[in-house]
Each structure stands twice: as C-alpha cells, then as structure tokens.
Amino acid sequence: MPARGRPPRAWTPTVFGLTVLVAAAGCARAPSPLAPQASGSIGSPNHGVLTQGAELPKTGPGWVWLRNDDRHHGIPRFVRAIERAATKIAEERPGAVLSVGDLSTRSGGALMPHLSHRSGRDADLLFYVTTLDGAPVTSPGFVHFGPDGLAWDPDGKRFLRFDVERQWLLVKTLVEDPEARIQWVFVSRDVEAMLLEWARARGEPADTIARAMDVMLQPKPGGVHDDHVHIRTACSPSEIVRGCEPTGPMRAWIAATDAKTEVTETTSELLLAILGPMGGARVPPDPKGVLASDVEAEP
Image (cartoon, rainbow, N blue to C red; front, side):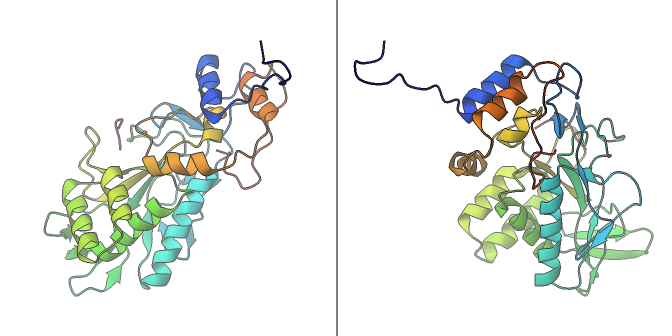
C-alpha cells in the first residue's frame, strides 16, 4: 500500500528491464508472423540474419571494395562508422585507400568460409600498407605480415611494409566513435604489439590505448589474422529489442554511453516491439538507421 497522501508510483521500465523482457519473450532468429517486431541485425554474428541493412558503397573518399560482390551489407550505423573512419584517415594521411573485404550479404545468414559475418555486425578490413620506401599503396589482398612488419606480395613480386601509423589511426578512430560501438578487433598478437608500441611512443591518450587493448584479440579458432583486421560492433539497447543477440563482453565505455543516452522510443513503443500480438503493428524504424539493423569463432 502506498503511503497516505502519496500517489502510487508509476512503473517505468528501464533498458535493463526491457532487456529482461526480451529474454523472457525469446529471441527470434528471423522475422515471422510470431515475431513481426524482429528487424535489423537478428540473432548473433554466428547464427543470425540481416534485414534493413545498408550497403557500403563500392568506393568512396578513402576506401574501395576488395571484391565486386554482394558481401558489403551491415547495420547502417556500422557502415557509416567505417565510412567515417576511412574518410578521416584519407584526409589526415593522404594517399592511402582502405581495402574492404566481407561484411554480410544483403539478407545475412551463412557466408562461407566465415563462421560469423551473418548478422551485419562484422567487417573484414585489409591492412594499410606501404612500399619499402614508405609510399602508401592499396593492399593487393590478404598478404601475411610477420613481427618485423613485412609481407611478401606474391602477385606484385615485392615486399610490403605494414603501415602502422595509418592502421593505428583506424583503430583509434573506431574505438573513439560512439556509433561504431566496437566490441572486438580481431588481429594477430604481432600486429597488436606493433600498434600498441606505436601508440605509446606517440603519447596517445591512455583511455584510447586502454580501449584498444580491451578489444584487440587474436581469435581461436578463426585464424591468426595477420593479413587483415576483423571488427565487430556490439548491439545497442534498441537493436536488442528488435532481435539482436548480445554476445561477448559489454565494454565499459559503451555501457557508460548507453547510460547517458536518452532513450528516444516511448515505453509503449518498446513494449509493443517486445510483446506485440501476432501480426501487430511494427515499431517504426529509426530515421537515422540506427535501429535498422560473432569471443566466438571467426573469421
């Protein structure tokens, strides 16, 4: 019973409470008459699909596809973050182009030979490289770098040098971008060591270095990742409501950002998205594409 003279306290669900409701209602793998609210990145990176995704343009200011295929779709905010990072590096360190490998297909799902890349939350980005005399060149493909920072290019019949300066700038830009929500940067231990040594030697912010140390990992299984970097974005609270399955750790800085961010959807919209009747109304997509939307095995 409420205290006399004091109105009953209204029940206001929090993001945590809504997440619990999502778990209780079950996590749909794909949109269906039983789960019309499921959309965007649905399921996990290893067992999911993608709807309402965005395709990274074939080329742009600072990036280019490695291959001409239908493997460049992802959560729109994640695609935008890749575009921003590539553009920033091209502006600050002119002459380099980021070669982009696989993201997900238009509808997600299995993408061989990958164990992940199924739900629009993963992207393979080839390393920035230079010639031995330091001239930036676009990566010719998946060439393997050793602890000395050198790789043999069998097609070009030449050695290439790992461009640690630009590669660190890429990692820095992504982990500092709140919309990117970087959860993992899968990369070899040797490459990780080179990047952190560079960052410390240049006096980069301690918080940024700490974030990079948290997210960088040589995966097992999934390959050494000495020929590219695999980045993964974490689900946002609103994406979880629509079927995105959180996997792996929640990074402290991402959680802190979520705690400070005002939830724009109303309580009724969120509850309808979670518990709406079969065939019921859909929650309208976020106008910025944020809502439209794999440590597990990889690549």
